[in-house]
Length: 469
Image (tube, helix red, strand yellow):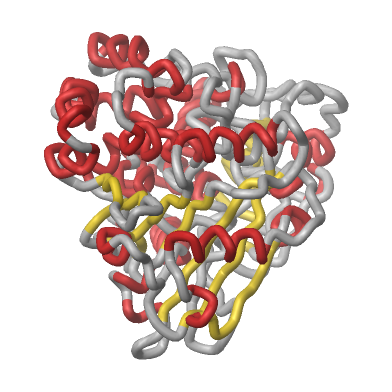
């Protein structure tokens, strides 16, 4: 009998398996797809030689993850590549605000009226970042806070809505960039604890940047898999689990799946009926004949580029999706251009690029033209660079990855109390009604992102149970 079986070979499932194997437990992972990876994959979606990331591409939380940093993933091929700028937010006048490794450079891009405000906002946390990120990403009670004073101070700044925090800035440049940071979790700007979301992304950039993985996001999943196998763990692909009886006998079962899928497989009925799924996304992967022709010079060297004219336009796009149930006319876009720092991702002189905008959950329309019209506002001539494109709306995303219910790449709405307390209101979110069954997906704290910390935290609950028994 195995000590633990993990269902789902995404970053959280693989991390949970590694953490258990490192502690001497026998572990096997079962994955429905023919390759490991979940939201961290790399594929030729458009033309031969163009290697795209179907979902995550830039990894500010991955490079800062306490779980990943404690593993020797570099031995197994994972290398972080840092673009000249982690992120840029261009404006219609050809200038840009930037999120740089340097707090001073970031503050200067906002202009003199907000430079000091930004420094006062982030500098109390920059020197305590490693303790803060461990405390923040280990909540709830999976570990005692290492720096409770800094964590409490962060909570005072971050728990109010982002709109409150944005009032500290006097000019639009800082407000717009910060609104874009919050929009990465597809949450309305006025929601509970959205200020914390923006702060975490900004602090992550100042600490260790927003890198891409050399060769693509698949390198993260492949490194975790190779490390797991060296620890004696097994990985089985092309193995769909429809019920618990499909799995071999084990002392614990850990699911890197959506709560909906877990309920269906384990027979939990309506246990997660109040869990909410959030907005979907419409994503386009591009093969380009050259770099994106951004008007703003800073955007040409940034790994990630946020696209939205100002904070009002970003807020309106989020409201259109979350409250009005429609696709926005001017969508807020998150774009990543990996080949500015990793030329191996495309043939010589060519580039890969992706962009996505938010749409209602389950939306079946086509946002391609709207996305490209938005890009043309900030990069005139963009369409002339397109060699090929691969589009994926909510139905296609859900078909590729069962955790993306209705196209929600966060595996659950990151809004309201569910931003922090997921998948249920509980001090033990990784436990389920079955004493031997656990959940470790992005539906559990600390939530979305390729960081493995949901798997790490769930593994703690599992090994405590295994040792007690």
